[in-house]
Image: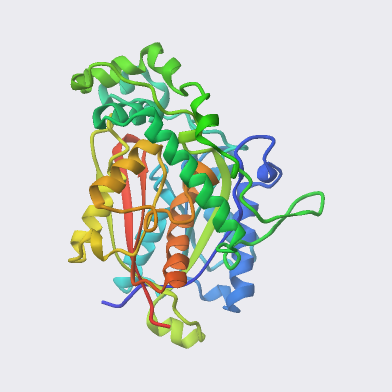
Length: 402
């Protein structure tokens, strides 16, 4: 068995996931094409040598339908012989694309491949695939499916977090995100996207550096209305021990919807040497787990615990945790139970501040984990995302020696 190495990583900046967002003017296919072009320009690889392109996307309909990865690869001019496939594991799609591709490299099925994700929430809205998990009352009843925000408030209630604690996390992640951009931590990976007016978009536009606890305290609950419409009843039927769900999350402590894309170039050691590319990291292992679809959002943490155990490590061995901020309560739980303080967990902010581009988020976090390990000269990092219906995916990364 060979190793799966990270050879390079590129991403777009994240735009607001609405018609007011900068990337609303660019199709999701075009976002992927531009990143494919950037990978070729940066590494000078012959793209015809790439053996597969796997892209995660959570809403595979309309502009994100019909195997977007294959379409983008053809439009990028990579030749008819380069396959492409699009996968869906909800919000964990991007990190799962990386995990699956790395496993295929370790097994010898591939020697050079691209993996990542894309989501244009502004052009293909959340739930627009109208799957039964979102739209069929009988499926929702039998599965116990609830909105992610209701699951977040249920978790916050069960874990005993207060509104003040959640708001404090919201302030913290905004401050870290703003500081990271000011310090240039994303300069190597972000590929500017030329917009139709000729301007370049190259900075995550959702960050609010002036966020304060006082401002967050004035925000109304984001999900109390959904709860009153019947979502609370579904959640409490599965977890009566909660008694009554406290609706504590607001838009300031929930992941902001975003547009964006990210790609990683992965390969075997032999291929890296043949191409003259210096490996940046290796994908040590991955884990895919599932849990109660009502609790739902704990799966990402469970995947982290599973992949660390699989490698014979402990949380204390991990230098960087990139953990998708699927609501503040889950981040506080992660930090408390894995003893992962703010210096190790999301040190440059997360999706609450910079935005959650569903299918792209896990790939962005994997690449960001590599970059942070390089900055602090750490050894091990983990990137993980919780997805709808109780899914979670994590990858364990080891920085290569300089």
